[in-house]
Image 1 (tube, rainbow, N blue to C red):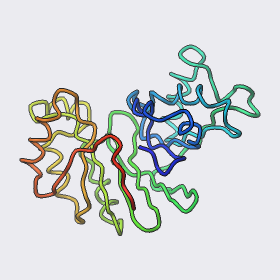
Image 2 (cartoon, rainbow, N blue to C red):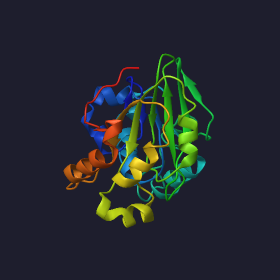
Image 3 (cartoon, rainbow, N blue to C red):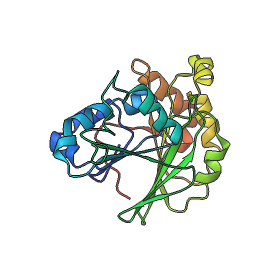
Image 4 (cartoon, rainbow, N blue to C red):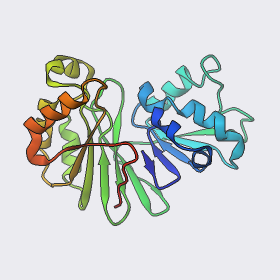
Length: 234
């Protein structure tokens, strides 16, 4: 998800839809967690535009996520350590840890890590423009702490929430700490405001079935499928 022109929220394969010029304008990436579908494009992004930029690309994430990126990707075995090249003093990549609930303010916009419950350390994000708010849950299963925070957000316009599995795969959703439609419905009942709701992380081959089950279980909340190139103004 691209925030304005200079901030990415996660960096999966969809980043490849951006042009080289658009990629070069990205200054920061806020990462929800270390799984490959959320970080896959970071190595290619920094390799492609690092030499075109006057300052490092900054990755914001939990310390555990940054440690995983450094240990398992930017380790010279899978990919060069761009936090050291072309030099330690002037690298292409820089890490900046974030903490749950502590907002980061950038040009009048604030980005706040929110609670999430996943198989690895994870967060969601609250994006606050000063005029409105969007919440992106990232990958999470049942998480009462998330809804407590979300319910305290004034002016919540949009909620982007995951639902990775259909109902017949509920056991897999529970084991992998994702949501299925029946679980999503239970979570949305905890929501006290009525933002526009969009569903993401749908599995290929099960999209129509999962969205049909979401409509049956949670139709009162009017959830819609998140689309590529969808634009939110807030």
